[in-house]
Amino acid sequence: MKIAIMGAMVEEIEPLLEYFKEYEIVDYADNRYYFAKYKDLELIIAYSKIGKVFAALTAATMIERFKATKLLFSGVAGAISSDLKIGDLIVATKLAQHDLDITAFGHPFGYVPEGKVFIESDKELLDISKKVANSKGIYLKEGVIATGDQFVNSSEKKEWIQKTFHADALEMEGASVAVVCDALDIPFFILRSISDSADMDAGFDFEEFLKSSSKKSASFLISMLDEIATA
Ligand code: SAH
Image 1 (tube, rainbow, N blue to C red):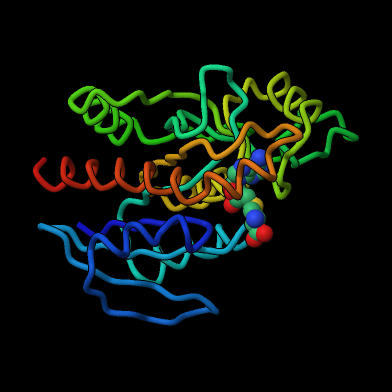
Image 2 (cartoon, rainbow, N blue to C red):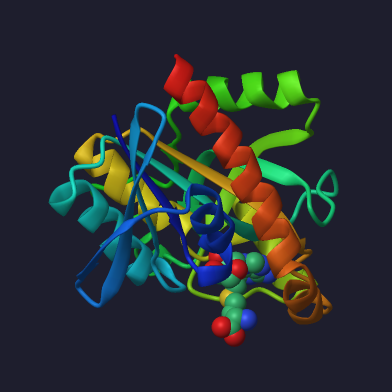
């Protein structure tokens, strides 16, 4: 099985690269792809760079050019839900683009004709994540993730996103990856560990917790790979 694993920033995939150790490297379309073998799995690992466009390009490349059959995302996010503290893990049940706005034509936020406001994650991968969380006694929140090309560091904006999309966390890539995987019929899974609370302290918290939260997300993802490999 060929599994794509992506992050947005180098810090998000570094713990994975350290864990799997040996790679073949392919440079393509202004990005670097790391190929590794783990148990009976073939892995393709890359970070996309920040934001929806880069994330969509990397996801599509991993699927179309490198033939990944599942895609797992590991990274950090800003918390919206008060259930989520820095370092906690959230997996997206569904994702929306909070900055997609043609409401001038009477459409809801996050919607364009022939698109969907919410894209749902793969049920099997969600089940695997629950199994891993239960067996390891790890708190894993399931919830809605909202994505936009903006670092949110304002309580007002965060509340608007909460009200409009009932989102529990926000970040800058997940929903674009979801759109690509949904269109290409590839099961996907978006995992994030909280780095900040998307409020006025977000910039500071993000810098402080990027590495530790990235590690938590990556280490959970590795446990999921163990589960996928033995299934
Ligand atoms: N400090 C970085 C920029 C980080 S942007 C630099 O200067 O290069 C934030 C990244 O973490 C994005 O990839 C996004 O997906 C995630 N993220 C974490 N907290 C976020 C928040 N409050 N708002 C938006 N994205 C957030």
